[in-house]
Image (cartoon, rainbow over all chains, first blue to last red; front, side, top):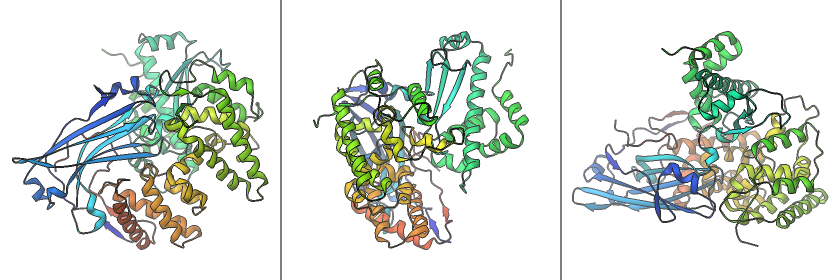
Amino acid sequence: MSKVTFYPYPRLQSVQWSELSVNFDGEPYALEKLPDVWDANSEVTFRVSASVDNELFETVNVDSSSSLLVVEVTCRDTAYSLTREASFTRKVDVLDAVAEITVSGSSVSESIELSAFIIGPVDKQPWLRRAVLAEGPSSRVALNSDLVGFPTSVFSFVEEQLPPAPWRLAVTAEDIEAPFAHSVRLELNEDFQVVRDLIAGKANPSVHADLVSSIARVLIGTIAGIKNSTSDSRTAAEVAKEAPNSIVAAATRASEQYLGSTIDSAINMYFRQPELFDYKLLTGSDLYRMKS
Amino acid sequence: MNALRSFPRLEFKDANKLRHALLSRTRLPTFDRALFEEYLFSPNAFPATGPVRIQDDELLKFRDDCVTATEEASTSGGDFKAEFDLAIGRQLSNWAPIAGSDFGVVAVWDFITLVLLPDLAIQRFDLPDDDQSDNRGARSRLSGGNRRHVLQRLWRRRAVFGSQIVEGRILTEDDYGSLLERKLTLEHRQLARKVAMKVANSGIQGSARRDYTRAVTRALVQMSGVVQFSDSDLQHLDYAVEHADSVARQDNSRSMTVEVNLPAVDTKAMPKARSR
């Protein structure tokens, strides 16, 4: 049994971070507006700055001249990452750095993750040369408007020759770590008046509650089914923590929000006490509850 | 023809329908020219803006390249699946500079697999005999975005490891699996290549090798909570892989005790640095 000690490595206690700002084709832009304009020909620049009190670097025993501000873009869908670095410059009592990264639309698609760090050598061991001294703002940015919100399609079930129902969920996940955005999709049947009302925002709140409980049931049931047929020593909660954009992470949030329990006990309940599962879900989703 | 092109997308519900038809054998896995044109010329096939749309004759050339590669694989005398993966991977990486980031788009893979190359895709893996049986495995092979996707994984392999490592056949299927299932090694291509070389040169084989690769990758994931990995700092990656190797070699129990009191780097937004 080996033991890796990752603590205590010191961290900078108070860093002033700027927001992550976006420049799209030369113009400032809001992060959440990117999916409206982004395409594979575009170039996007992200910028972040940090300032740290002079003496703060002494508290972590790192020479400020060997520290860097790093901004990173990663894209799971294109198996891509890019980092840019900037050194700190001294301004009286404060050290400032500004890092900027430009990502070509031909390298990334669907969604990207942005993050910023201050790194520096905290130890003689060479692998600790890029130790994280502080974590700055981070953000997941959708580039495809399809990936904003719950993945949903609206169509007529009659035209597709499907048996009628107000909605159904299509699940293609085959492991619980599968990216949520690509493994679950809500299909709404526009043949139903309630669905048309729902889309128009005019539906009875219980229709929404009913839909939410459908989604929660399918998410948790999917994880229960996959978990039951595969051998993995990790709990579902552990996997969710490791893969925050996965279907198991979504199911974990659903369990907490609608069942008031952890994903692992929700799975247990799903198999062993379906009546309790159903009851908790009806309670948690506020189905048919009169709001006073 | 080296300029970037937009590739056609297949809408989710159409992909679902075609996938189901193939898996339930209600549709023969053959290339259907009429169906190809129907989906290629449908109004939602291409994004409204972006690179020039790929033409039908270019797509048919792409198909021809892949058909020829499959024929070569089946007459090579080697194991068909391994030869197919290499030959098709070669074609996909030839076309990758033209597709650019469109090869990261799930709906593009659904079009390529279900409309353009259904016959080749089905040839690569065995359909389950009974379509009512748990066909999750088969479905994942035909679902764009899934890491077991029959074609997309071949492109991803080339993109991450480069042609030298793939053509050199130095990695096993298990090695590819454990390196590509982790976000860290999937996205940090240079790191993945260094681990690949380390594993290939380790001399470890069989199930011990699988455990070793997993242990190295796990150690790197844990280290990523402490250090920042950059594909531009190759020397640092060397140091990191050395360290992960020494952790993995000490770790013969397969379960490691780790004290991590730090947040992982890729979790939710943290607007301010933590103060503790």
